[in-house]
Image (cartoon, helix red, strand yellow):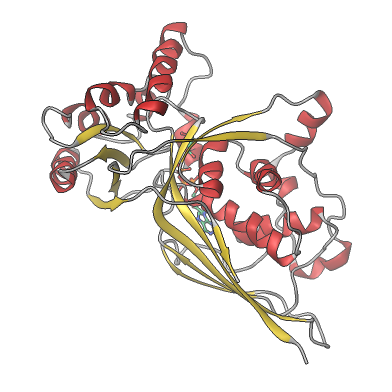
Length: 354
Ligand SMILES: Nc1ncnc2c1ncn2[C@@H]1O[C@H](COP(=O)(O)OP(=O)(O)OP(=O)(O)O)[C@@H](O)[C@H]1O
Ligand SMILES: N[C@@H](CCO)C(=O)O
């Protein structure tokens, strides 16, 4: 007689960039994508039964429930195939409950990808180390800020290693080859040669975070895809703008770990000239919200920036949370943008519970 294997995977939301750290820093936040997984082990006799996915919460109306189309399960299958396991276990059941709104700059896709690598690791009983899970995630989401923070948790800085020619080629295959949407009945014959990631693509470090700092996510009621928000960015920058960002980022990574945090240092250090000025065309009210809410006008505010690719605004503060959020609401309203807001804590990394 077999038994059911059950486990739960929990992935936090993330805010990338924190102003000047475009594609470099990420912060994990206390909203979660939770997967509850079960399947019989050993596999019962009889015909193969394809995975059954159910889903509740954010994105429930749009997310595909077909395991060969859903981002999380496609990533899991990629990991399994790279380890010579061609299909999901028979009778697999997954329920996803998602608190992370889609396309708002809170790392929903990064969370779905990390959920996928962890799911693949568990289903295949692969015991891969965190660094290797990150390699797989980086084959799918190719900027490291969200996925690294979602995987390891906290306030994290990361870079991608310069790869040799062969490894670079292996790491730059199109996403459609990493994650093909193939028909469920293709079975064993399908994709015996997945592009295995080179080792050690991403490297990271966790910075300190002062406990008194909370994150206010001011979330406009419209979606903005990361792809669209990256399309408006230039391919070249002036030395002046790069130095502007590097100066601030160098200060910010330490300033957010100091107690008590210094608004005089942090507010200026959260300014950016690499992505926010270009994204204002897509987010009405962005320059006004980030310039009119200051530590002088709002006690407790430390700094304010675009969260990830937007449209969410991230305000870091030690008190006065409601006044900050409600005033941001009034400014956005002048531009015809309605918002919701949430007070969030900095979260730990992804977990698996058996
Ligand atoms: N839980 C999920 N399950 C399956 N697909 C998801 C899930 N969460 C997000 N996605 C996919 O990712 C898309 C959103 O990704 P996108 O990169 O545009 O925004 P984001 O990750 O929310 O924002 P950002 O990267 O700026 O933080 C969704 O439209 C959906 O296709
Ligand atoms: N660094 C990325 C984060 C979004 O996923 C960007 O700003 O485009």
